[in-house]
Length: 108
Image (cartoon, rainbow, N blue to C red; front, side, top):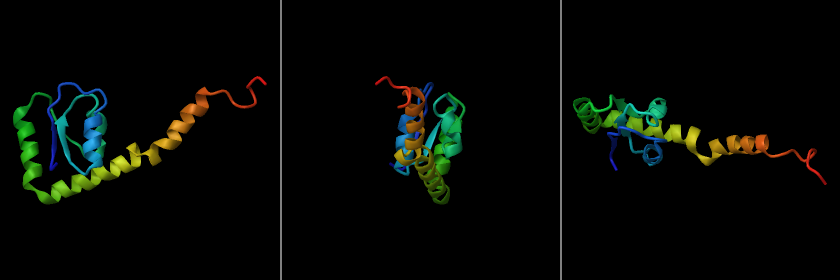
């Protein structure tokens, strides 16, 4: 896809946006929870229910190839650094270590 447009009124996790980002597809969405968390990753956000601003943001990306490429690369890098298995594996392992008993405290 050339662009993912998410005129959401509510987003829990923004997983659809992250999946698009992982494909190099720039995202234009609304300033709602779940998508606001992705703002530093290159996602373009506009106020919720502001159709004129949403249309302007979409047209701006579709009409400016250099900006589209810039956001595509920025979002791909954000996914690699934050949402890939390589990035998440150490955090997941730490969570497991924090909740599982250590071998020294296990009963024999």
